[in-house]
Length: 480
Ligand SMILES: CCCCCCCC/C=C\CCCCCCCC(=O)N[C@@H](CCCCN)C(=O)O
Ligand SMILES: [Zn+2]
Ligand SMILES: [Zn+2]
Image 1 (cartoon, protein in one colour):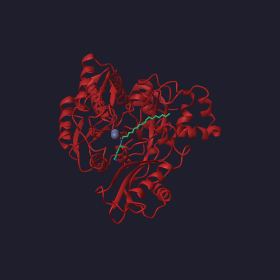
Image 2 (spheres, protein in one colour):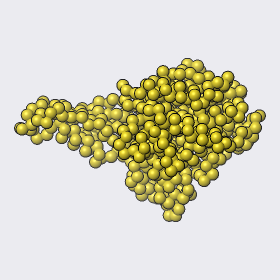
Image 3 (cartoon, protein in one colour):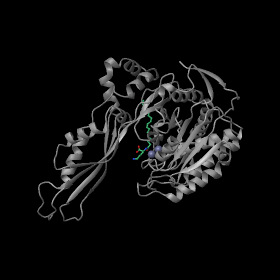
Image 4 (cartoon, protein in one colour):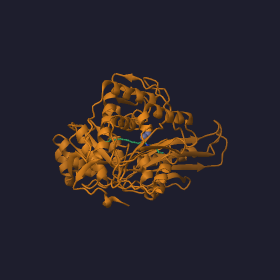
């Protein structure tokens, strides 16, 4: 176990007590950020006016961050932001905090309040981006602003990278920032990004909230399936059309899920570490996975989120066919979005898919694909993981277990694998099942959860300056 010297190296700790005025300003700042519709629609289309406005907004709301001599601010790829916070001790390896300013579209239908209004109702701030991921953008800058106003000077250098195109690829933002840091010879101790939460009541019989730090993220593949045919008159149709052939192929994929990989990834370790958090008899089952693995594995398939953690998922998301009501369609095509389990590769999933469809009339075109990310270390020497764990216990006293997990989505962090192998995905926000509204309608964050997120980052930045007994300051073990 790492021993934590609770003293900072030579400065004294700044308590995370904020005045009523500061707390109100913190909430207003988040609401203002939600009101700027920084939507990424597609590779071709994003709201660049809003992205530019967002850059001006953060300068206005966080003046101290932008006017501190040891902080350098740069705009990268036109709308992304890189902050370099120079620490006083160059022997300490720097780290990186990540977040993104763009959001997915939010058609107004189904929303209780307009999605870009940032309105507060019953203790929640509503709006697109309140969880994904303007909460992190604003909380990081807010925590830093509050620290600076209390004359904080860091000892360990760190970077803050705010991408502007995470929801479409991250290639203009995160990828360029990463290349810039690499060109400057930067090597990171670790990076922290969105991707997991503190969850309460997530599974039946879980007694208390648990914190899951994702230490790997799934791979992805967008695969186009296409069927071509000679068009003709719909009054004398052939037995099968492009639409029916393609539908049958998709149906095959839905009826034959990718293999259950429970036991080959983070989930088994996660459940073993969480066993004590479940009431009886689940705790006994989880402590004896050698016997109950098949039962647990089937149980996990029943919940869409845990199912996504144990297998490659297959989601048909786009279907296009037909040119006129009385013409046999010449082309039918669909895009299937795969999320690849850490124990599989793009190549394996593509081969499995072809075997499942087993129809030569269906063509396969890989539009975009990448393998799952490597698993980041969680041992006693893993600085990023241990700092997160320590800060979680301090800020969320109701959480008794912190466990490693897998992120079922993708994040900008995968563009930073050239700079570190310690990538940790964790949003310090406590979520109940009713709040899992990322990309959905009525996305929201409670005022209390957001204030806690700011407090968490305020504490985390200071913890990164803490003297760790039993841990080398440069974590050579995890260098590339
Ligand atoms: C006992 C089990 C406890 C499980 C606790 C799980 C808690 C976390 C559950 C879900 C979190 C999901 C977070 C996903 C973040 C994904 C961010 C995102 O939307 N990324 C996009 C990127 C798109 C890139 C270009 N296509 C995506 O993945 O689609
Ligand atoms: Zn996100
Ligand atoms: Zn998202």
